[in-house]
Structures are given as C-alpha cells and as structure tokens.
Length: 467
Image 1 (cartoon, rainbow, N blue to C red):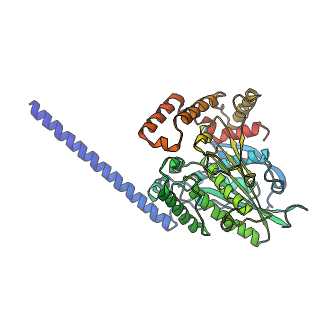
Image 2: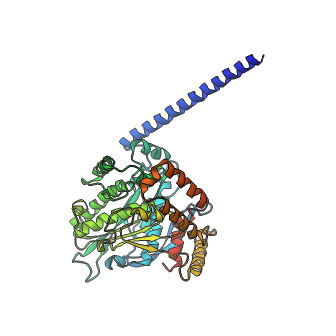
C-alpha cells in the first residue's frame, strides 16, 4: 500500500512539474510574441502614444522676468502624486556670464529636471496624465517643444524590449527653443538668440541597469562596441557622430551622443536664421549624468577642442549652461575642472549615496563645478535643515522623510567601500560581491537610503536657500 501511495505521489509530482514547465514555456512564448510585435511596431512607428498637441494660445509668450507655477509629479507626494510650485524665470539670465552660478536658475532647473520624470505618464497607453513638460515649458515661453524620444521609452514592454535589443542605455528627454531679442550691447552682434533647453529623464525601468555598466569589463573590444552602438544610434538621429571617449562612464555615453545630435540640428537652425545659440542642459540622477556629458561635449565644441565642433557646431557668441542634480560621477578624464567647463554646475546633496558613485577613489569625477548643499557639520546646518524640511512639507503636503544625520551613514559606507576596494575591478570578483553585500547589510536601510536622492528633496533645499 505504501509503495502504491509513493508511486501515486511521484506520478502526481511529475504531472505538476510537467504542467509547470508547460505554463512557463507558454508564458515565455507569449512574452516573446509580445516583444516581437512591439519591435515591429517600433520599426513601423506604430503603437505608441502620439506626441501631445499643446495649444500655445494666441497670447505672446512670456518674456523678461516673471514667476510661473509649474505642476509635476513626485513619488513622495500623497494622493495622485501631483504637486505644484512657483519658479522664477528671467530671459536676462542668458545674456549674463554663464560661468557664474545662478541660484534662481538652479531652482527652476531642478523643477524642469523633475518634469522629465512626470512626462513619462503621458506616454503610457490609456493614461490620463497631462503632458507636464509641454505645459510647463509653455508657461515659461518656450515653443517647438519635442518629447518624441519618450514614445518608445515609457511603456513596460518597451523597457523589456530594450534589454533584448541592447538599447537600455538610451534616455528619454525633452528639447525646446525660446527665441529672445538681445538687449542693446549684448552678445557678439546677433539681434536675437535661441535658448535651447534640454531636460534629460533619470533612471527609468531597465535604463537603471546602465548605471552599473562601469562594473563590466571595458577592455578594448567592449569599448569599441560601446562606440559602435552610440555611432549607430546617433546616425539615426542626425549628423554622423562619435561616441563618448573611453574616459566617460559607458552607461551614459550612448544617450549623450543621441542628444548631441538633436542639439546640433537646433544650433544649426539658429545660425542659419542669424541667431546665436544659448544651450541649457538639465537633469536629475542618471539624467544629470547624461546632461553633464552633453554639456561637456558642447563646451569642448565651443572651445574648439579636438573635432567636437564638427559634431556640435557652436561658435563665438554662443554659450553653454548646465545645472545637474544628484549626479553620479561621469568620467575619469583628467581635465574635468578645466576653465572651459565653467558653465557646468552639479548640485549635490552629500547625504545622497548616488553622488558618491562611482567612487572618487577610483578616479571618477564630474565635469564642471560641484555645488554642495548644506551638509552635516557645516556651520548653521541644523537651522538650514529645519528650514528645508519646513519648505518640503509646505510644497509636498507631507513631512520630509530625510533624517538630519543621514549623511553620517553615507560617509561610513563610502569610507568602507573606498578602504576595501581600490578599483572598480575589485567589485567584480566573487569575494568582492560578498563584501559588498556585507557592507550594504551593515550600513543600508533600504527604506530610507534613497530619501536624500529624491528630486523633491533637492527642490526643497534650493527653495529654502532662497533659490
């Protein structure tokens, strides 16, 4: 009897296993079909949400200096996640010295960087979310706004497909233009100038994996593969391009090159019309890293370094500004602090673990000037932190989740990583992986570690500091 029961149980287990395997095969087949259908839709420019048709109205665009209320979404906001905040805009900024840090522009740029995330909701099928980016930029007087890059980079199926087609290193971004009349005596003779704004979305879906590419083998063959991919992507977007140099983070160069191609077309259009070009590039997190590389390429072009000007035709009378936030390190280049990058400002919360990665001890830096928000140990930090949390609560409608001593935990973790790993290669060994998990277990609370990284925290800091 016992033998028969065991045999019956064995047969039942086999049947269950066979059914499970069959279900997995069916699921894999269905997923494969879905990805293939989506791939064919992408090739035929079908099946994606159409770019929004924003009514710009009959009223002339706002010019000069003014305040505007912009709506956006944030993960920490209650209810629908939508909030609004007031920003200042001044066309006169673009006739001032680009190398001087502008606190008001930094605050407005932080909000525009956050809008790059909010725009994703519009591009999801059956979503009722508005086109936040277009609406906000209309308020600021911009026209010719394009968010075309979101169309196949905002759905779950598109993120899954990007892993198969090896295009997860791309990024969605908005690009827009505002034409300004130059005040008397400004510029190098052009009566008008085009402000070309680029806002790059940060990590989204599978794109997050590109942050880890610095851990992968980047020998000569791998570096050439990265350059080949970026070249191919850029050629589909415009002029023939070179990929990022081998000094730059491989997870960001492909997106940076694609964006440079779009910027080049707008710069050329401005010059053909007899206008100068003023480039403003913004982004948060991975978007900030990509913006940092785009701005560095533009600065190289403006300075006539190498052949950058052949790819991005900036000329005397043009200018480059970049305001990035929560930006990981982007390059091992030796000249990140060169004077030609003086218009690039990276706003950093030192309590944010992401701004410390990849580690500086591994040789990684950011182009331009790092602007640190008030930090633990600074004179007056307690009062500044209290003002920031109050501003956050007024803006968001909920208490700020950030602890005043969060930076101490991050410092300990960074020090521990720097002491145990003298290079990025050391992380890729089995022993290295085990040590990393040990460090994470010792220092990281997964529920709070990213609180200092949220865009709303950066916006609250900048607003509380008087913009």
